[in-house]
Length: 261
Image 1 (tube, rainbow, N blue to C red):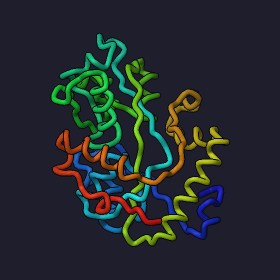
Image 2 (cartoon, one colour):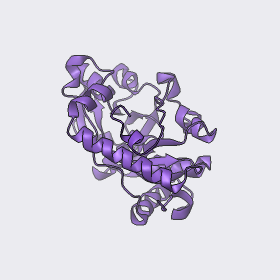
Image 3 (tube, one colour):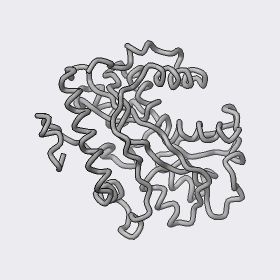
């Protein structure tokens, strides 16, 4: 917004910071979280969420459709305390791991654990409004974190045992016409191109909640640009969710994704 990329597309965009309630707002039931409730009430027209969550939200809330994959590949870490005996992801089988329920780190943690050979039935994720506190206090042995929590955990001595990466989706209300959606995606991609040449601005904004001395090494998302959500990608993700009980059945692509631009 500050560089005028949306204004160049004749869009008047109003940005809202997610989760104004902080830790209290990271409740277990995602339908009660701020941006999901705002979209359901029609107070928000567009919001980003993880790819799995985008499918789940559209299905559960009955509001909006996915208009594309988000502009970034998001980054996080699976972390344990400094004194933990756990050294590898495979050792986390049947071990409680703090996460935000049905958010990006929740699903990314499952993929990470399964890739390390941990069967789904032996993955023990637990919701924690404050994941960092759950890890450092010993309530859980590990936590799936993203910034600024990764840097704060590391400052407290916690160790990373695996990197987490996941793609986001962009959900928009169905009142937006195709022309507006196209303008929005073009504006986002102009911003991505600018930020790729101005990492300091990303670091300043995305890591603003960290102490200045921690921002230099903090994790940033990988900027890749908003992209069309192809049927093959959608079906692969939706089928993965069905196989693990997160969806009852694979929804039709047209019910969840807005393909016309």
